[in-house]
Amino acid sequence: MPANATLPISGRDHRLDLFRGIANWAIFLDHIPNNVVAWITIRNYGFSDAAELFIFISGYMTSLVCANIMLRRGFVAGTSWLMKRVWQLYVAHIFLFVLYVAVIGHIAQSYDNPDLINEFNIAGLLANPFDLLTQGLLLRFKPLNMDVLPLYIVLLTIMPSIMWLMLRLPDATMLGSLCIYLAARHFGWNLSAYPRGAWYFNPFTWQLLFILGAWFAVSGAKRFRHLISSPSLLYIGVVYLLFSFAMTMAGHIPNLANEFPKWLFDAFNPNDKTDLAPYRVIHFAFIALFATRLLRVNWSGLQCRILQPLIKCGEQSLHVFCSGIILSFLAHFVLESGSRTVWAQILVSVAGLSLMTAIAYFASWSKTFDKPRSLVFSRHARSDVINTTNSDDAEMPFKNQAWTERPGFSYER
Image (cartoon, rainbow, N blue to C red; front, side):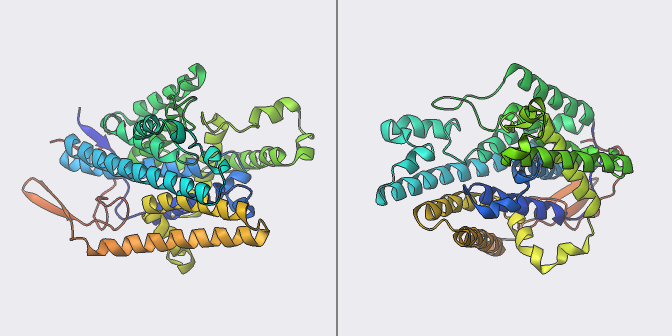
């Protein structure tokens, strides 16, 4: 069966970098407990949060890169790129795991604060370090706030077979993902964690957003173009987002919760994040709809200086995300052991975001010393040299390339 895909027109979509940067900043702020600055993130005003944004965009960008490679060089080349990316993420996770545990343990010991060890779920290392380190390597043991990368690694690992199907039967692949999602919620499927419990981000349900992003990159965006521009859907989205806002605020304000029927309030509180409740998916879908309609690909605001730090953090997402995990712990410790005033919360939040941004710019700058790389493909005795970028998606083979968007574009080896 020949590959069949409709891919976006050439050029890097900096909206994706912008929103991935926003997701990284929001994840950092949300990981600091009782932080007043975290009230600027979307989790406080609706059902979904930065995790949905991060996973969806990761699926979209992974699919876009991998589809280009598979269509031009074949399935083996695309799989090789994916496995290289899995290895990069796994190494980053293990390095972050060791550093994170070491920092928490050192601070807990130095400041005689054993509660930190329990709070961040590393107490078992004291009693049985070898088992926990082994389970950490297997992604089953995860300290607090280290759940996203293992989910990303697992989803990337299954992507070769998903992409093979997606490029041939995109709608059937998306339907299969939906069926797995519904079955996992119905039968309680999840991966086991160590020493007990299950994964905080259930891969059987969260794969829906990742594959939804991949599907949109391959064919979904073009097929839903008319639906996205529908005024009726816009009105429905406004109503749903207002309802989501009311339910979320009711979870924060007890007096407001009493104004709603108990059965209605209990249906959305507590918010089911582990199994990715359907209302979270719908909420994110409407946010994505509004973002797509309001911010066009050629939006001039993307060149605005004030947005460049966010865009850069999106381009260097892995470096920023990993540093954000460490910095969120340090910010939490500073607030807990010192002043908890609003000004202190603002100070540590701004300091953390500034350091994450500096790391992003340094990572981008340091890559300029790498040897120039290009991907060379040939077809019918013709070679196309494709430029790469300095982003985390270093093999992104669509910058400055003259892609032609046409339905049913196929490539047969």
